Amino acid sequence: MATPKILLYYKFTPIPDPTAVMLWQRDLCESLGLKGRILISEHGINGTVGGDIDACKKYIRKTKDYPGFKDTEFKWSDGTGDDFPKLSVKVRNEIVAFGAPGELKVDEDGVIGGGQHLLPEEVNRLVEERGDEVVFFDGRNAMEAQIGKFRNAVVPDVETTHDFIQELDSGKYDWMKDKPVVSYCTGGIRCEVLSSLMKNRGFTEVYQIDGGIVRYGEKYGNDGLWEGSLYVFDKRMHVEFGPEGQAAQLGRCIHCGEATNQFLNCANEDDCRKQVLICGDCATDAGTAVCLDCS
Image 1 (cartoon, one colour):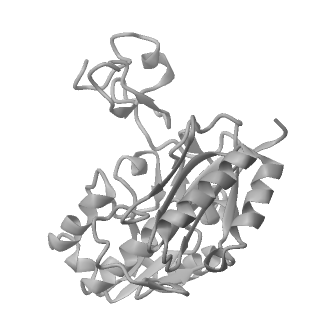
Image 2 (tube, rainbow, N blue to C red):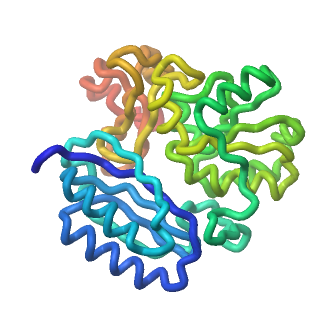
Image 3 (cartoon, helix red, strand yellow):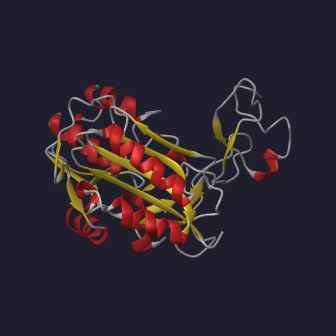
């Protein structure tokens, strides 16, 4: 394999026949030797695929041939060539599983009624102009925020995206409804849906970072409002922005408290599937290579 790369992308657009698109995408990826995960619904497509750089370029060209996908923005990331164990292309009710397929509305321009998109420099400008009034709202699972988040961000107590609606309806965040709220997530897709759910529930000034944390980190590295590492859902587990070794380590080992950004699967593989923060030293000891429930 030549230079391996990873593509992260999504597109909200009406898809009349998701099954046909699924079959086409599966055949396309197989023909190019790409692996990863692609979800398709009547609302659009959400994918992360990896492989040879030339195959990735061909995949982009072919995918943009579909009229609804012609304006899709593909984000590039370095890979190892073995970041995904297999190819999975499936049809789902939602391309982001918030549990609200009937609430989400899309047209050819994307999500209807979502938050206003801000470029990374516009995010900084908003904070400069409005100061502490601005609230960063994490649109990811709370676990992801353990190793990286925007400065002073509100991190909802959620394990999956399915938990967000209950959180928003709980009243915990009603104090934010009249404040400028900047929602953020890895690549932007979760906030496309989350921001619309928030506006439907009375949050009056909702923004989302165009391209998500990935775009912001590419722009500002470790010199902006983002702190720490970015959790990613492949074998890399996390990525950093800016020069190597300069990202803050926000995570703490569950056993000794040492700074770490490394999530590991609990060593009790037969009975436990938890991912937890464990430093390198504790990971080498059988007694501390497990989660707290299994220790």
